[in-house]
Image (cartoon, rainbow, N blue to C red):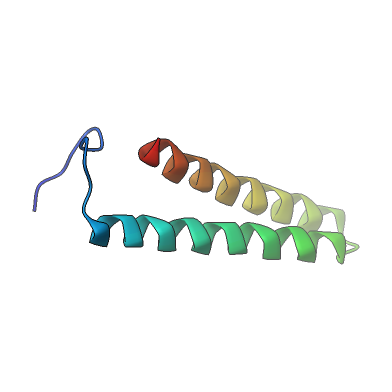
Length: 68
């Protein structure tokens, strides 16, 4: 297996499918964390869920950067 520091100019359809899955997992996780954040009263848990949501949003951005 070869590791790349940067994404190659062309990626396989299998890689694209995998990146799509990663994006969807993180997008959904961000939405779920945001939803739970709105329904929690404990401020410490709200803050934690906000950070979790932001982390997953950053992962989505990273996947989009690979594809652009």
